[in-house]
Length: 323
Ligand code: GLU
Image (cartoon, rainbow, N blue to C red; front, side, top):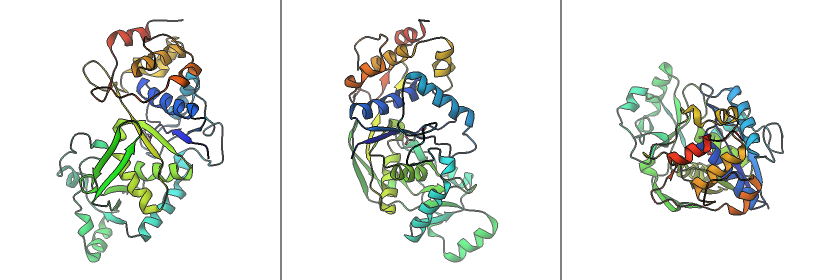
C-alpha cells in the first residue's frame, strides 16, 4: 500500500511562510516516498473559517508548485475534502464514543474554565487540563443542568502514559491525566479539531501526519481517540516552527510574510522555496530552487533549540528580488 500524507490548513487567514513550510515538508515527504498527497480544508470552526481564505490557500499552494492527488478542485475517493461537508461522519464517531461510555456533558462556563489557570509550557493546544468537574456529576445533577444550559461534550482521556515515536522529534511520552478530558463537541454544536482531524485522517487512510510542533500535544489526544474508536493511527512527525531572531514565532499577522504579499510583490515561487530550504538546512545557501530539486534533499532537521531561526538577512533576501 502506498503511503498517504496530507496538508490540512484552517482557512482562518492567509497562508504565510510558516504554513508554507509545513505544506512543503508534507508534500516533499510524500513525493520522496512515492506516496500520495491529500489536501483537506479544515473549516470546522465556522466562526473563524472563511471560504475566501480557502480559495486563496488553494491558489497559494498551486503557485508554490505543490500539487495534490486528492482534494479541492481535484476530488478523489474520500470526498468531500472540506470538513464542513463531513459533519455526519463526526456525529457518527460521537455516537460510537457515547456507546463506549467515553463522553460526558460539560456545563462549565468560560469563567469556570478560566479559574483552572493556564496550561503548562508546551502543552498549550487545548489549554489547561480540565479537572473533571462535570465528569463527577450524578445523573440527576446532569438532568437538572441540562434544563438550563446546552452542554459541551467531553472525551474521557485515559489517565496513564501515552507514548509514540515521532518521526522528527523521537520518542514522546505524555501523561493522560496531565492533558485532561477535552471537548469533542462544543455547546454551540461545533465539532472540535481533535475529533474531526482524527475521523478524517482515518477515513482518508492517511498513513503519515506531518505538521508543526505546536500540535505535538494534540497527538496523544488523537491517539486516545483512535484507540477509543478502534481505528489504526498514522505515523506522526512534528516539524520545527519558524521563529525570528528574538525567538518569536513568525506571526500570521505579519502581512509581508503572507504568500499573497509575496505574490503581489512579484517574488518568484523558486525564491520562497530556496528561502524555506535554506531555513531548514536542506540547501546550504539561499538561492532560488525548483521544487523538483528539493525532493531528494528533504530530510528531518533537528535544530538545537527546537525552532528554526529565520535571520533578518534571510528575510531580506526573500523580499529582495522581483525576478
Ligand atoms: N487544521 C490545523 C491547523 O491549520 C492543522 C491540522 C493538522 O495538521 O493536524 O492548524
